[in-house]
Image 1: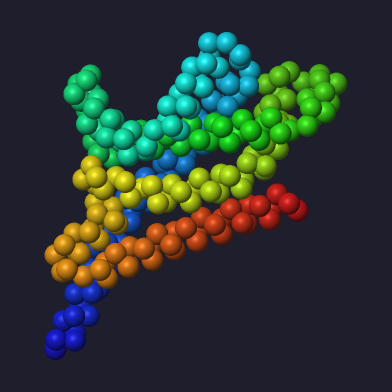
Image 2 (image 1 turned 180 degrees about the vertical axis):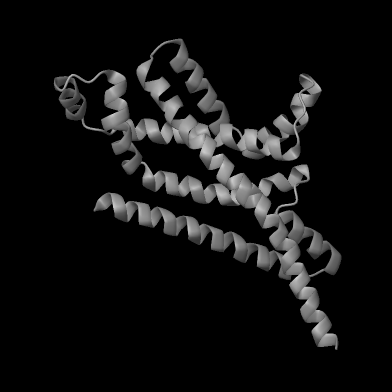
Length: 218
């Protein structure tokens, strides 16, 4: 009977940790959906303009790449209400913070990839009578996305681990749920389960990017 009770308890603990996985996955997917296109737009802004817009984007990317993501999360969730009276739910604060943070990294990744495209591509597009934006949309951006895959893969994996930071603002993701079980039972097993889940999610992301790289190399 004791063994069966222990087995049931373990199952309940795993289910409790898995409840937080839905939040983690939602945060991850929404961050990718919004930060990737924002990163592309910002990178084009930096490349096209050498004046005020370029300086603003450079300042933005420098701030968000040069300060800890956790500090940015604290500022959005705790700082904005104090300074401007703007309040967000924990999930909305997390989405906003993660999107603007990762968009800054994606901006520099895409900018580097675009700069790596041979100038002959631009010249060929001009010969065909394409405008600057047509050239970027039809030729340059598709090629830059291919060369950007390896660094994008690294950031995508980092994002999985960074989602654990939202536990500090009370969000019940897998790390926070695991910590509650550890505190209750004085056992590290929930942390082991949590680590396995993060590892499995990382393997999924790695597999997806591997498939993408194989397709574009064909």
